[in-house]
Length: 295
Image (cartoon, rainbow, N blue to C red):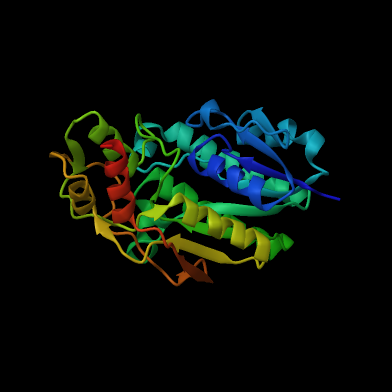
């Protein structure tokens, strides 16, 4: 009987939070596969049910060979996941999101493993035209096209979850892969101005990691081969979010691939999207963060 769950990017922000949730909600043993380009051993859990493997997803066939008959599901969260940085690190983005992800899809297909795939709202905006704004959005949208063809050609089973600007515990706060909320928290703690990309009125639907993970788990349990989105009902501009920290703000020049709105859509790749909304409020989260830091 297949009892293993494999999580790519299991030492990263989203992956480690998912593993923590799975340890509570399931009795399954878990394998994490991470190349630690942005993941960290600080996100490891000391639990005998988890095995941490080091490597690239492009080598998943070799790395996970001895486990393939025991793996029930793969949560594929181990991709290059930043828009602006995908211009600077195009090779890394392509290797991870195209070559690596194709290898994960093929491994699942060959071994009859259920796939749960993290898509992105970055490819949904402007009636789908935003998929061409950056290498990141382009590669992610092409992966969705491939999945739909694999379903048509081989009856491949998968769940797709669209993420919307995830924030919360274990988010990256410094460096190229830092999140917006992570950057703001880091600047706040260092008493430095919060940097906001011009013009500042770009809107985002910031979604807490716990709300995001719950939908990933829900999709996995329901097993309906469905597209889901998990976002907050309320969108905020980046300037509005920065002002919640009540700190100095510094505007910086616009960057390639900048989106001006987070799109909520009902249709993707000819599939209806089951829209889920998070319960955790960003304003309450930031207020709690500031209060805790000033105790």
